[in-house]
Length: 87
Image (cartoon, rainbow, N blue to C red):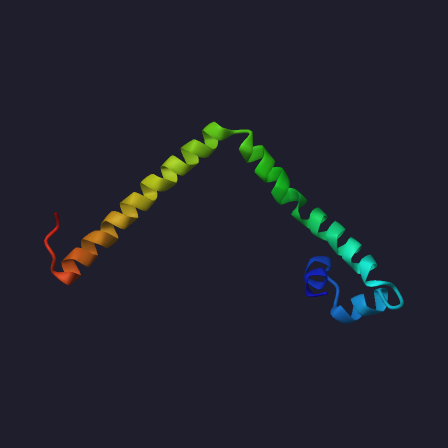
C-alpha cells in the first residue's frame, strides 16, 4: 500500500476505499502495472545507454580519472596528517 500510495500519489485511505470489497490480487495487479509504468523512463534510458557502449566506456574512463585525482589529494593529506613518508 505504501509503494502504491507514493507512486500513485494517493493516500492509503484513498486506496483502502478504492479496493474495498475487492480481492488482494486486484491491488497487486494494479500495483505491478503502476510500477512498470513508473519505471518505464528508467528502462528506456538504460536501453539507450546500452546501445552506446563507446559512450559508456568514455564516461567510465573520465569518471575514473576524476576519482583518481580526488583520491590522490585525499591520500596526500592522510600521509601528511599521519606523518608517514610517501612511497
